[in-house]
Image (cartoon, rainbow, N blue to C red; front, side, top):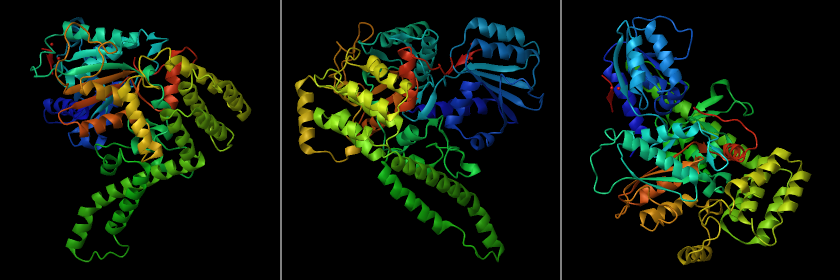
Length: 568
């Protein structure tokens, strides 16, 4: 179960089936992101694709010597653009691939427009999602709910995205959903409807234990997206923002022109792939080793290039050297900027108190520590606000809660009214009244004992005490203890055996901390394969925007909103 590989194979097949010759790849805004996350431009160039164009671009030239490979979402706008394109074709032949199911009536409209008979094939290749890591996918959608219900235009798009993941992974799953969330139930029913309607597509070879789709709601755990992170990928997203594997570094003091935007992709950056899940301390050591390794391989200033073989050796090694040089300067810049932010915003002290709020229940210590940090002028506005949010969620019903006085403290600190309003919004979004889980205080004896022993043993790393609620949910699911009363099956049947292939989807967005949990479970649980997805991948900033949209306090929605067609 590897979502990156599934999308890469689809794209390779598209390009290969058009045969030899020069090609143009025609995409829309969303499929451009889908492709760019799994392939670099240079990798696609090697496959004779020399031009990348958007279907909605008005000023494309006629290039009859090129074959067109169209990879598009099956939206009304794209079908309309294609109809216009086929009436006045700019390329010699068209291979059309839709990233999801397309209706017969739209196929008919395309066939009628193809008067010059330039279409060689129309197919459905189900790559309708962003493959972030091999076990993590996103739909790049934000602002999916209105109160506790779906934003009407978003539910169909999420249904399409999630069914395409199932089709790409060749899974026809049993479905479980979070009972406390009406949105989870609606999505489960919507997916089931598609599976029933398109039963031929889902006719995969039966496995002994059927796969399982588990649908969860972000509001059940509002704590995880509020925490500062200390592993490389999660930290980069939290402090710098990862968008389709790209980081904008243009605001970094003294940044050079070629490093204003960098790409971090585990597919073609070995250092990043090896350090994705390591903590900040280990990355510091590894970057030092990378630098030393680079220094050894660096051509000496006065390197003798006397013979032809010297020159040939230098030229042969130069691309590798250049690639290594790019990797070194990129990671040194990124880690340097993370380091600057950690020290400037005193994130180690902030994070220690966040972890205490998330994992322990000593109210008097918590209130003193939060107050102390709020009075520290170097603690930034967003960090001050997230501390108060964590306090509000943790001690929501505490008899001695000092929330009003903390809000007053934020006011004195000069925190904007918009940020102060977010605290109430977060409790409204993911407070006790909403949650279906024991996020804060465990109620069953096993969990209480576990927490007691954890307290006795002490903590290896104060910055990594927290485990997302997802860890417990999956742990219970794998052990066959996840309660049907909280996570019912859709339909009459249920799974008797331990699940093997699990696809988890979080409405309202997943996080890189949860992706790390899934990565570790995949490594340590033999015979279990888990893939995690979300409507988006959050950091604190994007999560707070999601919350404000859900509770109705401003912000803007983002995201998107062959049959011969043979289907893959």
